[in-house]
Image (cartoon, rainbow, N blue to C red; front, top):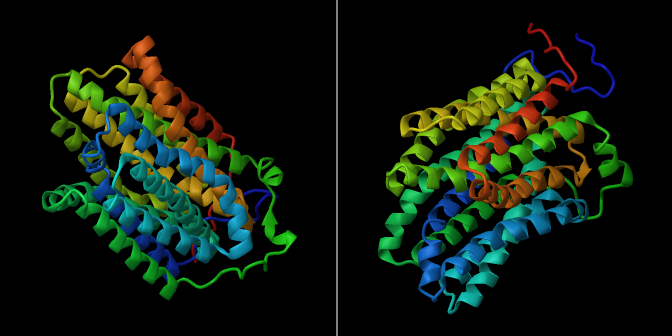
Length: 403
């Protein structure tokens, strides 16, 4: 048996390969339904908004409102989970998203569209924070990497399949993807109620069950995981989502080439996400964080010097490999720190990704406009390099030897 230093992560490799709790798979399926539904509606949303007379600025506000309300609502998710329990908050989030999507399908004006889309942002963060908190509570310490990977795999598969299906449904009617999303969410709600057990009754959590934020902020593992989440949000939504499409089009390619680049990298990440989870559990959080941030930083740094489509796709694929590890390792670190207890730990971790998603595109756009595109890529590379350096400061914990 391997001893661990006080305050360090628990041993991260199992002596055997026991199956994951069934809640992990249910949460993965539910997350896949949510992401599939988002994929259905996101490509259609700008066109749908334009039917109400919305111009580019109004469409941009509609898209930004979803992320903004996620960010504003995040700080309250921990308190709600303590008061009502994760399962109830999770189900409330799914139902709110379902109602939002159904109402969006029947919106009569741009103003109504704004209100209904905003409700979806609130429901989205209630679901995502509660689902991750539930996942980390039910998964044993030596399976948190695998559990996080299975959870993320559901989101990845849903994200890959959603846009194509949304385009087909839009041929029927522009409102059809929103109604399909509502139905998917109702099915996900039913699955959650049927399988997930109430982890905490309302008001049952005592003070000792709550991890206070000042305590978390003194834990290096927590800070490194949150910083990695911030860097990921910045790169995914600022560089990958906002900058790469404009670069590809500037090279003379049409938007379809952007879709192919994103699809190829998403497939690479989907293929690697489950092996990445096993690496997190067997090799340890520190090794996985160092490798993941190293690969991601190398890929984004290389994009500073790339001037052709093929090398761009290669860079995105290398980033996808690093991102697969960064989808599992930081969440496992958060699980080690929080250890299934209530509080705002998971909510603040989720909020870091949202901050990167909201601030990243704005800053990256300003840098690209006032300096140049390589400088904008360099901003993301600098964040990932800083996360790589931070990962080296994590405590070293040797895996428990196998019997």
